[in-house]
Image 1 (cartoon, one colour):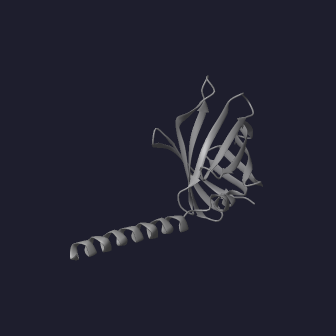
Image 2 (image 1 turned 90 degrees about the vertical axis):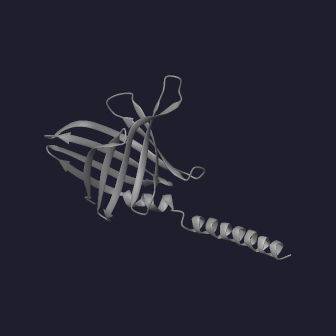
Image 3 (image 1 turned 135 degrees about the vertical axis):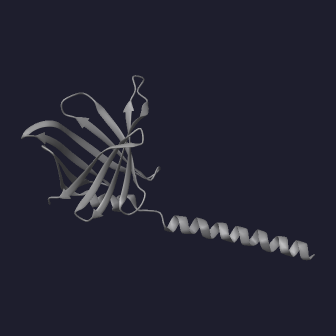
Length: 167
């Protein structure tokens, strides 16, 4: 009888503990749409003789982005991006259209904390399926007006840029 009572108490404790753990996980879940709003505005990064500017504006539960890189006053790269929240995956999905070519990139992005966002790049294969590339980004908001963007290839950091909010 004592063994049955002890076993029952252990099982009930485990079930209650598991329920509390699930509740804590749900409560601690990050609001991806709200965190995405940190990007809204114009951001600038200067590196050697190159300036990069992002203009990020709200669009539904996402944003539209204009990006331009210039070197010595000459535009060397320009693109448009559209980002939107996907409720099913609880991720932010993005698409990049390159102005100079027909290339298109796709992205999956999510905040892992209130200040850190991670992004993985995908490319369309010839058969139309998406395939993960070896590029990924991490952006760390150090303040309301500054974030550091790290670009990794094959899990090795190849560049870091500091972006400051212009407006």
